[in-house]
Image (cartoon, rainbow, N blue to C red; front, side, top):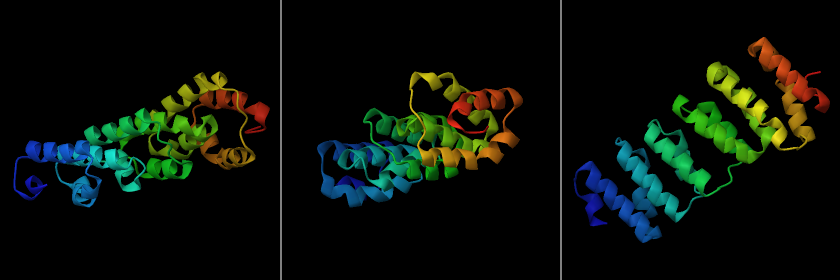
Length: 190
């Protein structure tokens, strides 16, 4: 603990933070928390890993998926997926709105935990941010559509109908026709 207060090299400080996390000193969480916003990615990653070990459901810790460093955000996404921590649809929606580009693909994989219809809604809501990335995600969603036979809830159907304008304006013709064909039996986009 004293090592954190001393000026030291980045690697030494990161290893000290990791050691505290591995030792399970949960009462040190408040001392480690400020390191989530450190200027060095190595220290932010160590702080994430230590705090995640104390409480994987801590929303401040989970926000590391939005870190400006691909190293930190990929580590956060990996831990959340690996431990099958449920992320609410609302939280995912917020993350999609502000996520750095390097995080989008990882968030899409995480979105699959929300269910296939929620994943489609997130893809379509975010489509205008980066049409190239989201086109690939949409095509992937369409490709695996039939693997999980699950009807959309009435709320999901309403949300998808509300996204109709985005869908009609932004999708290329082939993807639009495939999506229309896929969703027609559910009364969406007819």
